Every structure is written in C-alpha cells, then in structure tokens.
Amino acid sequence: MKDYLSVQSICFAYAGVPVISDLSFSVGRGELFAIIGPNGAGKTTLLRLLGGTLAPLSGRIRLDGIPLRALNARQRALRIAAVGQETHLDFSFTVEEVVLMGRYPHLPRFGHEGPIDREITRRAMADVGVEHLASRLVTTISGGERQRVLLARALAQEPECLLLDEPVAHLDLNHQIAIMDLLLKLSHEQRITVVGVFHDLNLTGLYADRVLLLAQGRNMALGTPDEVITPELILQTYRGAVVVVDHPEVGRPQVMLLSGRTGTVEG
Ligand SMILES: Nc1ncnc2c1ncn2[C@@H]1O[C@H](COP(=O)(O)OP(=O)(O)OP(=O)(O)O)[C@@H](O)[C@H]1O
Image 1 (cartoon, rainbow, N blue to C red):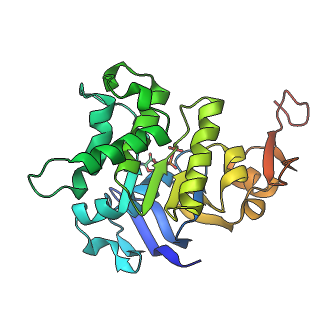
Image 2 (spheres, rainbow, N blue to C red; image 1 turned 120 degrees about the horizontal axis):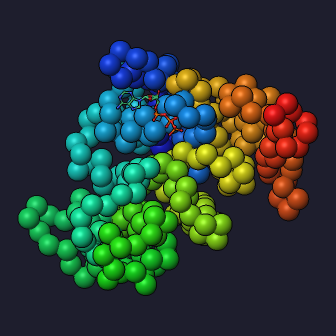
C-alpha cells in the first residue's frame, strides 16, 4: 500500500512539557488507521499535528510526499478534513448550512456555492443519516446527531484524508456500527485515508487495518489489531487487566474486562 501520510521522528511539547516524543510511522492511502492509548497519551495532539493546526518542534510530516508545512490552510483543507472531539456548535445555523461549510475550500474567492456543492452536501448528509435534520438548527439537535453532522461537513469537503477524534464517542450502538461501516467503505472503496482516535478497543479490533498504541507520547506498538490489542500491551499501557478473545464471526480481537466484579482482579 502506497504511503499517504508519513511521520518522521516528530516531537512536540506544550510550554516545554513534552507530549509527543520521537514518533515515526506512516499510513497507507485508503487505510483505516486507529490511534489508541490511555487518557493524556497525546492522541488529540498527534491528530492536530497531522492536520497542521499544530507544528512539530522537530521531525517531518509529509502528505502524499509533500511536506505538510509547505501547504497553506486552504491547500490543507482541500486534502484533509478533521473532526475534533468538541461537538459543540454555538451559532444558529441549520444542519444543511453547517454541512455546506465543508464546501468552502472548494469555492472561488468571494464565490458562492452552486448546485454541485448542494448535491455533494445532500449526499454527505445522506451518507451519515442526517438528511432528515437538514432544516433543523444545529443548536437544537442532540449530541450524537451533532457528531454526525460534523462528520457530514467533513465528507462534504471531499478530502483525501479524514482525521477523526473519537468519531463515535456520542453515538448509540446502531449509529456506531453505521459510522464505522461508512468509514470502512470510504477507506477501502473510495481510498480515503482515515486516521481516527478511538477509546473503544472492540470497535478498533473489529475495524482497524492497523493500530498505533500511544502512551506518554511514544509509540508503544504499531501493527495489526491482533498484534497490538493484547492483554500484555493493554495492561502495560492502560494499567487495566483484560482478556482478549477472538470475535466468533471474524476472529478479530475483542476485549473483555477483568475487575473486582469478575473476581479475577482485586477490586
Ligand atoms: N493546550 C494545551 N496546553 C498544555 N497542555 C496540553 C494542552 N492540550 C493538551 N495538553 C496536555 O498534553 C497531554 C496530551 O493531551 P492530549 O489531549 O493530546 O491527550 P489524549 O491522548 O488525546 O487524551 P484523552 O484520551 O484524555 O483525550 C496531556 O497531558 C494534556 O494535559
């Protein structure tokens, strides 16, 4: 698989406090790539570095062979769409207006959106199942609906790469599966590179092509879900005891918790 994103020895610190340390990896075009790790590991910071909203203190990030820092914000927005953890939307736009904003990087300066932009917006809303909310104010929809609207806005951007911070965190079971299936289709069929931060190790095990396990800003493991989602690595990084079983249908790793309640670990 041809590399789309290439990260070489990047370091980053907030006010002198190191958060990302000497991190290197690459992501293939059309790969569904998961970043996992405990709270504070640096996952969101890493996504911001990949999206170009933060710049590494040292090291290099390349996008399709081009140094990320050589691209301005609009050039980045034509290639990358990012959806952050913050699903709050302050202003009283309708859902359709918010999704249409994804088209802005494609519009000429001072230009207006046309029928093609409206059609792409409609399709993006349909893909994430928010078409029925099109005329609702974003301030009046639920957290999970808002999360899907923001994903629709990212899709309307028609990016080569999606950077998603916990894209299913607020979604119910049915919508989690629908969005993960959509991400799989986007990556494998449309060759969009999808990089997502996930807390749900079972969804990661089921869907990811490869997984980067981050702890204290360092690469603790990188490989297939089978290689990374192991009881040893989970205990070492999350300090949580688990057993890992094979999914009965597809054999992919699924995590079961051990705790005081299961009687296998001191509570
Ligand atoms: N703007 C900031 N200024 C200073 N420190 C920050 C800032 N943002 C994050 N940090 C710190 O950097 C570290 C990594 O934060 P980050 O949000 O990248 O972690 P994360 O792995 O995404 O965590 P979580 O799973 O809790 O969302 C944490 O210790 C956090 O407190």
